[in-house]
Length: 317
Image 1 (cartoon, helix red, strand yellow):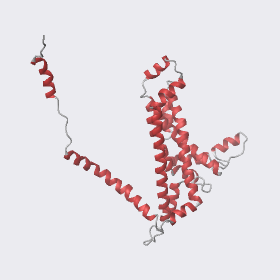
Image 2 (cartoon, one colour):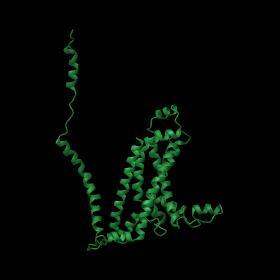
Image 3 (cartoon, rainbow, N blue to C red):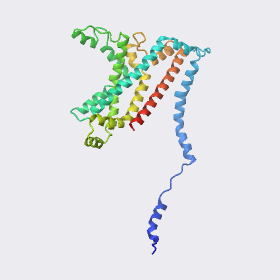
Image 4 (cartoon, rainbow, N blue to C red):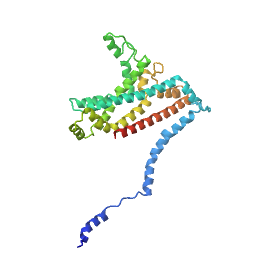
């Protein structure tokens, strides 16, 4: 006994297959249109990035003085001058210290703060707004305010409090170690709330069912944090650390307004040195060499950060 499929039974399927729209093929016109839309971006990159970078590399090999019409080729002498100048090396050291220290401390503080702000408590909305708006003012304004608070004189806000408690005035911004600590402290104070808000946005996207299932399975808060919270926060961690590293490497306004780079060159940054050498002292050759070295250092640090982020993603995936 044989069974045959009647024509009406297969007709609807065949008709549905015929009525399904065929995938559109990308034509050469679409490719040309996409390339045309990319032209403004390419033009902006060439004008604002590629050309200035090429000019910096060229002037770093000359003794250009800026407005002087003539200059001579000096090769790598400017780079040798950078490594022979202790003030430039100290500026590079503090810049790297600032970027690494602020990235680590802000990350360590922002994640627990975000977890705390994600819980239900009275005044939660006000607390979230307070931590976020602390970092809204410009760093230059924040630096001027904290310059008065950490003033090494007896009328500084902190020293007035210490004097009322019977302690001597502390030379906060007059000591090289304390000045570095104060600058890094203010940077952390200003940015930790903003980055906690970033982590909070990712925390709110985690399904509550995951934590409920973990509680049923007997997992305590510590196990839930490392098994659920941290893996879900890896994308936010990558974004936050990248922003912290890049902003820390190019910092200028906060140390300058608080200490003017002092005492000595203890809180001097590379960006301040580039502006001082290239714009104030018109030593464009050395300033350009310093900018090229700083660019290379930034690329190395960012590559290390990207490799670390990739390893972290694999660790929690």
